[in-house]
Length: 90
Image (cartoon, rainbow, N blue to C red):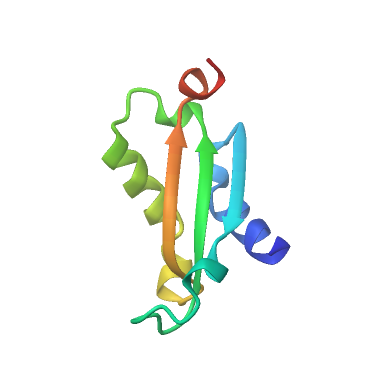
């Protein structure tokens, strides 16, 4: 998975994340109907870029940065946890 980790880290670099964790959950979705390719992932991002930004907009920001992986069918599903440093470290 280090290839996917590195790829996502590069695409998410504009967020200057304090914490970036990626978990491949594809094994939980083996034989998932409607999956025409790509893995299932969960990502945790902690970034001051999320300060003052609502939950939905945080999700949209991450999805927009990772759009090439969705359109390239490298990601089928993505669970996003996006926190500010204050939310995460306290």
